[in-house]
Structures are given as structure tokens and as C-alpha cells.
Length: 294
Image (cartoon, rainbow, N blue to C red):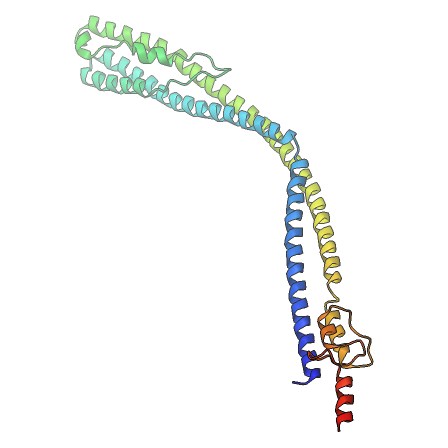
């Protein structure tokens, strides 16, 4: 192997090694800069959080809970209203059956009326509601007996039955009216709460948008700064090929000697000739010795 080819191989090996090390260092620095960027972004997000947003969200959640309660009550009052409407019809039919002495119709209609009472829901109290009397009705029942309790075949029995029916109608009327009123109140309060929730939700959206807008701008700046720093770092490693030029320069004996202690300095002496491992003689010295012996 000639000296020139050895130098070439050393130069190529040095360049490959330097390039691999440069690539590794660039990747290492890139990973570190990415981690630092993510840390800065996280810190910035924490610093730019609007302290009012959690408070508004808590208010919104509390109002939503109230609205849901009134919406549920409104639905229950609506259902009770339909049941009470049917009960009103059944009480009217009972009165007619009692006057006619129709025991069969009376008993069948009474069963339907009692089913209506069973179907009524006791709505929980909420601010704005008035007692509707449903619980008392379910507890005390209608106060109407079966046809056999009156003997509807007699005028006295018919009169007694009719009196009990009228008492039930008198008790059911205010319950129906208050149920309708509470339903209206529930709907009204629910709409008012919905308006408040909408207003707070709008405030939250505006504040979140402001935070995101500011955050997006600052994050873009942070990313741009990191990219610029990384680019400068890459430029710092753009002179990796200098190692090769130092080795290649050895091929020319007129070039300056390489730095002491380097790989090339072990192969090149101070005179510029190739240094061999025997007696620390240069190629020029060996040549003169051979010519003298000849």
C-alpha cells in the first residue's frame, strides 16, 4: 500500500467519523432544544391561564344544575297535568254514573280515577314553587267508596255518592290549578337560567379565545427562536470537512507539517518526509544511505 493511498484512507475515515459525530451532536442538541421548547410552552400556558375562566365555569356548572332541576320539575308537572286532566274527566263520569244508578260504570270509572291518583308524581320543592297538594291527595285518596258502599239503586245512596264525588272534585280542582302554575314557573325560571348560562358561556369562550390567541402568537415566537438557534448550531458544524483537508495536505511534501501529536504527525516528520517506525528515520535519510552504499 502506497503512502498516498494510506493518507487517502485516513482522510476518508476521518471525514466519516467527523460527520457521524457531527450528526450525533446535532441530533442530541436538537432533542435537548425540543425538550426545552416544550417545557417553555408548558410554562407559558400555565402563566397565561385566565384565572376568571375556572370561576365562570363553576358558575356555569352550578346554574346548569339548577336549570336541569327546573327542567325535570317542569316535565313532572306537565305529566301530572295530563293525569289530573284525566282525573277530572273520571270524576265527571262518576257523578253521572251515580245519578243514573249505574253501578258497573261507577266502579269501573272509580278504578280509573284511583289509578290516576297512583300515577301522580310528588315533585320536589324548588324556589318559586307553591305546594300543589298532590302528596295529600295520594295520602288521603279520593274519599269515594265503591257502588256497594252507597247502594246506588236508592236516591239516598246516589245522593251520598254524588256528595263524595263533589268533595273529591273540590279537592282536585286547586291541585290541578297549582300544578299548572308551578309548571309555568318552572318553565320561566328555566328560561331565565338558560339566558344566564348562555351569557356566562359566551364570556368563557371570549376569554379562552383571547388566551389561545395570545398563546399561539407567543408559541410561534418560541418555536421560531428555537429554529433559529438550531440553524446557527448546524452552521457551526458545517466545517466538518476540515479534518480531511489537513490529512490530504500531507500528500504534498511542500505543505506545512501537521500539528504535533496528531495522527499525521506520527507519519510525517519535521522535514515533510514520511516517517517510518524504525530508528525514526525519514525517507530522505534512507534514500541517501542507500545511495552511499551503492
